Length: 445
Image (cartoon, rainbow, N blue to C red; front, side, top):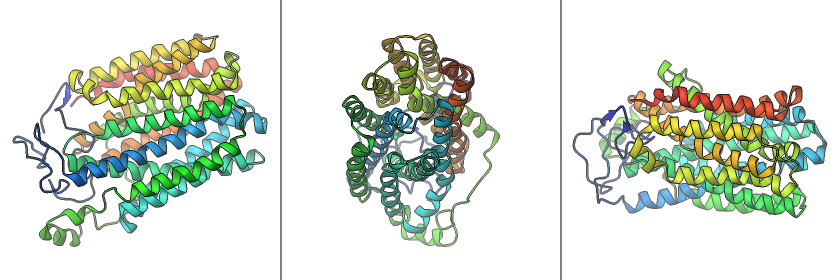
């Protein structure tokens, strides 16, 4: 696959290396008839030639994985809009709320390594269904917590489900991308953002109506679980079922697919640089998701419905940017795209810091959303190109570093707000967003 200073060729997405390190031989990720092979690729993985169509099974798998991404986003967006209710219900200060939210991201970080091992043991399809059920079940726990300690435990368990489902659905997205032979990860992440928008819109309506979060999340959780479990049945299963007999025999001799995934692996230096770029974007995303509603309520004096709309604006612009992200990257390249996005997001962060009225803050959060939208998918793609021999391990390293900021963001914003102001907290977020402009060059081939 040729790359240059302007990024990958069209079709060279996050799944470079077909199967992301799960042991399939070059080209085994694409089903026969999936598309014509394009001459000149050096990875050995077929790509869809212009005018060719993916196999029917690949298209069905993409739809199914898209639904799972949307369910995960809906659960995340639904919960984010009810954080102000949790704060008021338990009478928490910003610092204590930040501490509680740490437990959610700590649970996600602790559980993420278990997803690959579950997929290895039970199969990707069954594992995805199980972790989706666990994630949606955990959604009902936080509103039931009677005190801070119970809230921390509930958020930890909910975070475990979120992390497991996140890794499992992204792994399935890589499998679908390998079958397609071209990038689909940006659109999958776009549908996750669409899900957050749907969940956020429902949260706005519920908050504006003064609906108790227990009555809101209680019915939403089983509905989302049912949709995800049904969709998981149509996602791809083990790659070995699509390999030729000889390849299956080789796999039994000890390829990565038959070996249990390692619990932990240190990322390479180049992967660390890419992961730090993702760290900046995910920090801003986590801060905006968890604190936008609080910011509008405390700093601008917005009511519950209008406060929840800040998250909805953030999620909406992020969804639109991700759904159109592939075309933008093909036109301008990943480095220029991330630099421009970082500048736009930093401008949005500065507007949030200066805002004293709800409309200005909502616009600021919307600009942050569109500016950081494609950073994480591009980091995954760059990691796959950096370590072509083991793209799955490199992508896991980037994910570990990037999602670690999800652990830091809620607490950091709360602690800074406790000692200074919430506006000062988002001054730190704005500074990190400027890091996207300075560090975008690590995405250069």
